[in-house]
Length: 129
Length: 231
Figure 1 (cartoon, rainbow over the protein chains, first blue to last red):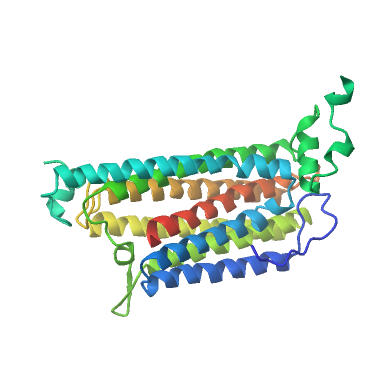
Figure 2 (figure 1 turned 135 degrees about the vertical axis):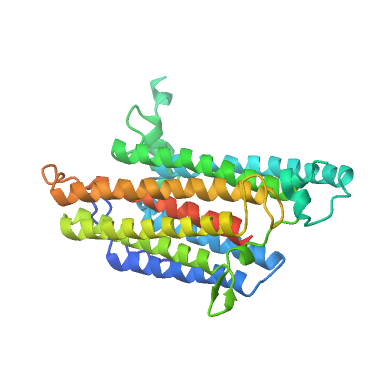
């Protein structure tokens, strides 16, 4: 979120912001999307790919929520009620990651004869014999 | 007793101004959200929808980590060939730009609605709906290509891991459903704006509320684009 925060004083009749701000954010979303597409186009791999994809994703999300959805002009009570609860999803992500890695290791142990990228084995999860 | 029952202005003076308002809003017997009920309810609905989409995306993460079969490469699966040259992920990039453009026109529709410029607000909402319809059409094209061309099914695929099809149809299908619902919602509100239904009250917040839903649909696509197509 690095948009120039021009903030007109009066918005008594609802969220009222200059159209130039929307156009600026629109342009930035285009640029960020192009960047994230270029990550794939140039086939960047490894940590850099992961880092760039997530960074561009979060920047775009911040611009959409902050400016287009007007969150940065809302009161903190609303911001906290809306933006904090989704953070508990981090716990679910952590748990499911541990679970998935365990499943992967047991599959490797018991179904290790399954050749990689075999289309016939792919049916039914690629794990059932 | 009564001295401690309510925080005085002095107790809160050490807090940053935003937090002072936060404590004051929650500690007194009053409405917590100083927005209309329609807007508050839309936000709360969007939070619940966030959890639904997150569960799909986390489920996708789980099956993708745990499969021992190689995952199909989205950059090859969703490539378009232009003049005989295969451009990776081009279709998805076009869909992304279309959805972002629809968010831009929607934001401007809200701007003109509050200026009570009905014609411009309705026209921009119709443009937004048109972008949305284009997006869904491209998605239908993409699904057709995958189902008929590549033989991908929710229970298996010729491209690699069987879980690819299940994740793909579930996540993009549910998102496409949201876009379709959004198009209908926008058309309805645009029609009412054009007919002057909100002229009497002069309250055009319905456009902002519809906009919140539409921007959320775009927001979800940002995450799907990054986590499903680019990962």
